[in-house]
Image (cartoon, rainbow, N blue to C red):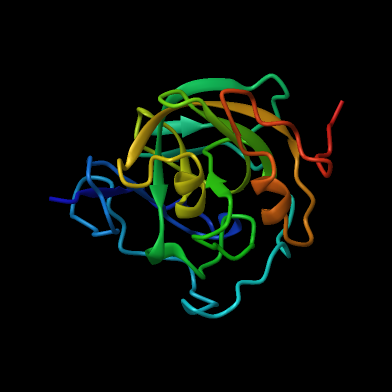
Length: 209
């Protein structure tokens, strides 16, 4: 039986008000939302229907103030030394075409991610510790809010790291730098995919001293 979990929605209009779905069970083949303590029935507006072209970029740069979800406080900040290991999950169709926390449009096929505290948008290196695959992805949303999750990845990223059918993966997440606001970076990010070696930083990364 496929089982998934949603994370609670951020309070405040400034975050774009989007929730995230993460896959939990082995053998997941498609998103099927189930009730649970982290389920939220509220979503940000859907501005692009599935099958229509998804505009890239167009959001705003944000770090944000501390906020509380599920009795836990998160403190957004730009930490150039950020590095964490833990569980990654993925999200998909329910959030496709909706606004992300920084005003971009979520694309389940892109190489994107949600993180609770890193700047938006920014680049992180995500390495699947189960198979050594590594890729740079664009963080443009907030979440996940389950205590053992370090990042939520798009379906496109989960497929690139080869854990889409498994649902979750043990990963290492490393901050790379700020991402540009405008334009599509999917082709450039896919070119960073490596197996058995760290993904190289993309040329467009903005390193902040």
